[in-house]
Length: 219
Image (cartoon, rainbow, N blue to C red; front, top):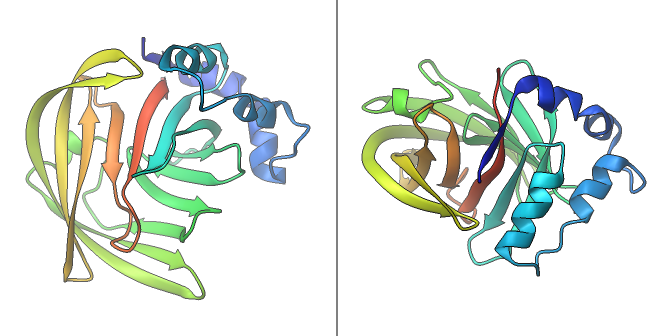
């Protein structure tokens, strides 16, 4: 069963995680131990059981064609941006379902700046065309402009580690720097929570996939 954690539960479980996010993931920390305890060779039921045993919100994260990583919530910022950590000490920051920053990945996203009209629930963006810019760091910082148009793709049956869910799919048609086109998709429940996504933050990187195991509700 896909679980939700309320904000009080998330914050109560974040003591070690917040230390990790401020001081780096130390190998001896309790937070680091939670994510290194996951073994990708196990079956879906083993992964689900391990995620359920943790006091942290968690998700699966993988690049197309690569194995899945368990990613654990390390900080819950007041502007609704969440920072998640992998066992390899990479971090992914999200705003709602949107990946807005990364550290330790092939191409690091320094930050994402949203134009007017954005929201964390993609259903409210259907029919709109919106702009954002992403600052990328490789050898030197560069800025990529993304223009997005959102479409309602209807209901879809989705399985996350064997658990079936009926979710609403929202597609995001993206044009990067006025020339490169790609499509992102988000699967949302009736309360507006995104439990699955497949998205490219940039046209030059492979699509990444996210499936939420424990959802960090903001109540």
